Length: 292
Image 1 (tube, rainbow, N blue to C red):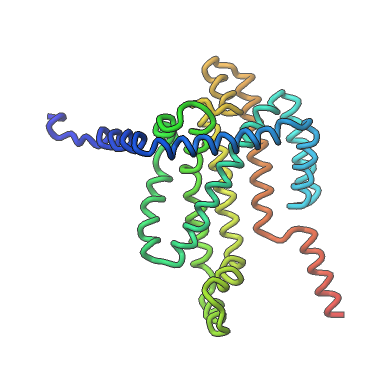
Image 2 (image 1 turned 120 degrees about the horizontal axis):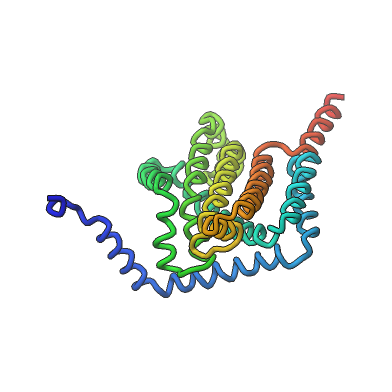
């Protein structure tokens, strides 16, 4: 009875995926080589110098983003990662997160802008984003593993697909939320659509867009950890190893390192949606000078 009414959807999808892999193997080989080179290069940059050099860079970035409190917290967190001997794995994970997040944002922003400017595109994109966000994260690893074999590349590809949805949604939401009167004023002054986008819509939508970027980074970090199951390495590999061995100590240390990196990335990226402390202070001084 079940066989009579069973829809072989999974078999159809599997056949389609295998046909795509066979037909476009040259494309997947190129993507694999490119992503692997990007990962190896960035991983070398992060893991090659002494740990204190990277800590100084991140502390300076945190200070620029939100001031001395975040800088101090960043220094303490990264030093803690060093003391629990998870520095190399953390840098491997950070390399994967940065590459996947940058590519996901590079895809999400233009797609979100396009969807905001066209109702037809938005009507097509939204169901696809719903599908991407509700599909279990582990499912993305299966086709990525078939296409790119074991290693960091399938982890990067699966992370890009999994993480880009909120970037598209929040970019579209931010641009559509710009006051129509401001846009009409730009048209009245003879500004081109491209200039209105660059100088009016994008600056006003920046908080929403940066919230999307923040969510892309957070989802990238969560997916990269899951990608440890396909040999992506890093902290995800450590967590998978701890799970297989039921090693509580290793699991706690690797998990703590993930939390620290997530908190640093979250605070730094979210701060760029608002005014920096120094810029805000300079702005107040200029206003006081003009008033005087």
